Image (cartoon, rainbow, N blue to C red; front, side):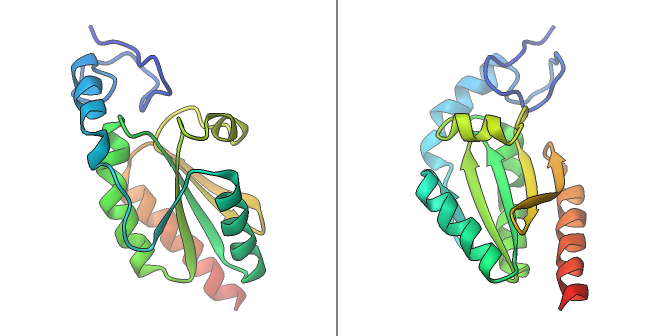
Length: 154
């Protein structure tokens, strides 16, 4: 039988699958923490000042802010990262950021992040959509839908 994560779980069930809920993989994920980095057009947010900067930028330019709440030890967070980076490069009319739930734990809690990854789509500072979990196809679908909304509004 699997184990529940002691942190924000990537899945909300007891499982024995190979994911960060498995104690062995959590240890491996933590040991690889240094290799979990962001590049390209994805902006890491580790301070509230950076959050304020990005949300102000999005609001003042009429852009959608895509927020990926992730955990460095969470395998699904790591799995969707390349897709998230690709989406950021493709949809330049949106602003993509990542927030580590451990670095900004209270802030993540305010956004009702109960699992990682959680991707929130914001327009004018308000949530317009949300994806919980590492479903790459659904992330691509929701991002395309948000981009289409921007096109219809312009």
